[in-house]
Image (cartoon, rainbow, N blue to C red; front, side):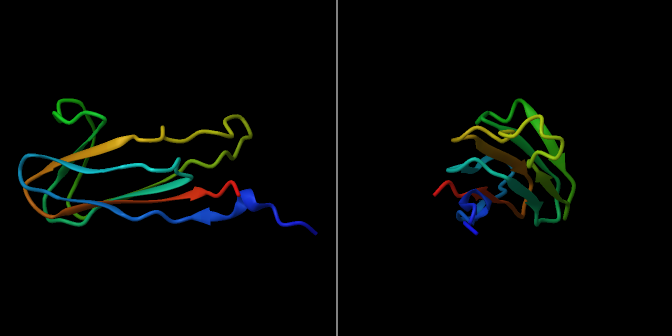
Amino acid sequence: MAINNSQRAGFPAELTGVMTGSVVKIGTLLFNPVLIIFDNQGAAGVAISVNDSTGATVWRTFPPGEALVLDLRDKAHQAANFTFDLNTTFYGNGASGTFSISYIYALSE
């Protein structure tokens, strides 16, 4: 039986940003994620902006210590390629602490 390589996962480096009270670049996606984890590891809320280095458009504010896992895999077979765009950049604005984004992607080899 042949192995379906599209079911194998790749693990890129974690994206992290130390919050300073100003808008901080957390990182840029180098691959299209299948699963993505947003993790506010600090004791203060962090406002996340997507592709907005000014922080004017907040996608979501994470309370202290909150983590969110987004499973982008298709369960209804309607959006097989549902994912974030390559080179999506995340910015955070919080008083202190570290915010991290971890993700896995499907290997195409």
